[in-house]
Length: 214
Ligand code: CTP
Ligand code: CA
View 1 (cartoon, rainbow, N blue to C red):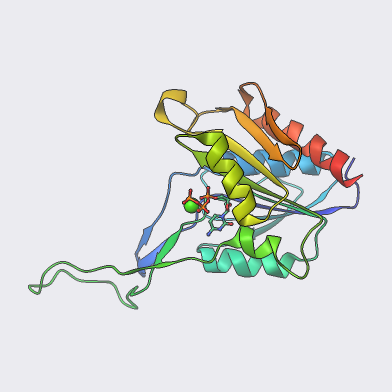
View 2 (cartoon, helix red, strand yellow; view 1 turned 180 degrees about the horizontal axis):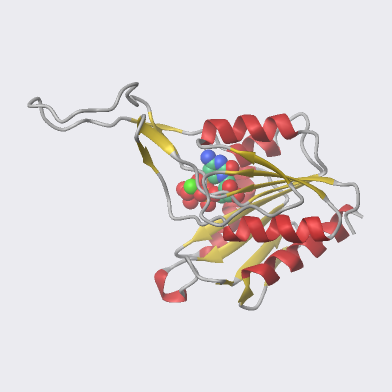
């Protein structure tokens, strides 16, 4: 059980504005993050659920913090500390538009707009090196090739404890589906989990987290 433990979950996509009525987004539905928050809640955790604009509704019985952008998500994550564990399932936009317009951009005779991108902060990396670092930090890695190698390198680069890696290449049908097939990468190596519902991945992960925090 996780009774009384404060656990942070990030979920969903982020939206990065181009102007007040337009944004850059990605295809994350928030389904896996929502399932994880639900499973942690069911084990008795006090869940802080920081979510971008997801298509699936957030779970009931958790503290929901709604954000739009990666910068807002970083602020919300830092404001939630201290927590015992954090699991970062959000699909954070890697870049935002540096020259976002304050007013709606208009078609003009001068031609097409030129968007300039700037890198967003890495929330998982920031949390893994934070002075209030949670005892257990878990990241995700969605890859389309060399899944284990890329995810193992990502774990080292981010400084998190575990990486939940999955293959999202189109042939797997994982992206946008109800199932997931993941590998859990930790200091003890790689565990291959069978293909199962995202809700079952979440339950198994929540139990593993409870064991690790016990
Ligand atoms: N992540 C984050 N902040 C970012 C980007 C990613 O917290 N700005 C987190 C995600 O929530 C996820 C993990 O980092 O848990 C890995 O995300 P991913 O996009 O796979 O990693 P990147 O470092 O952005 O690498 P890539 O170039 O493969 O996108
Ligand atoms: Ca990325």
